[in-house]
Length: 277
Image (tube, rainbow, N blue to C red):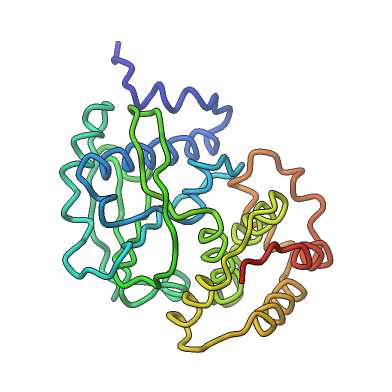
């Protein structure tokens, strides 16, 4: 009989009842183990975790995510994820799994994948050596917009450690930049809309100064709050709600969460944003 590994135990703790639920659980366990490896290697002395996966793991956002997003806390051309591959692999081996990590060549990106990817973002794929279909994409912004705050938050598995994360108001700023400026042609990323709803429902403040830094970095433009609110309302009023629901549905635990979703509902949420100017 094959021995049960720590990785298997961590996946089983999610009680997956379908192949999709099991895959989502495997992704999150992979992400947590990768965070432990990065901490072991000293990565968080130079970088911080952000994005939807950060919300899921550290703030209990009730949806799964496939990607991990990191930003350097100051501009430093010498920091790359390759420096931490060995530490990540070591922690995976302790959990009973072998992984391979590869940097992706941005020349081969499709239009959808490159729609919101900055020039100075390194992209990696992490996969099991024996099950390459179970993989996680990792992005590291090596020339980030600054003006954000970070904090160290704890995780208990695969062992107790602390990871550096952007604070919630700055995480919210990053999400709003993505919601308004992400260019997905005919495919809308409903996970942006889901996260936006979560921030507003929990009355998380939005750091507009950091949002301005992100917009300036991405577009080269200085945008006032009034201008941004107008762009936001236009995006929320015109988004295809059925497409948006379809994108996020495979990642949510309770699909009835989406029953309330209409364009008018999201415009109402926009009126309830807790701004920090």
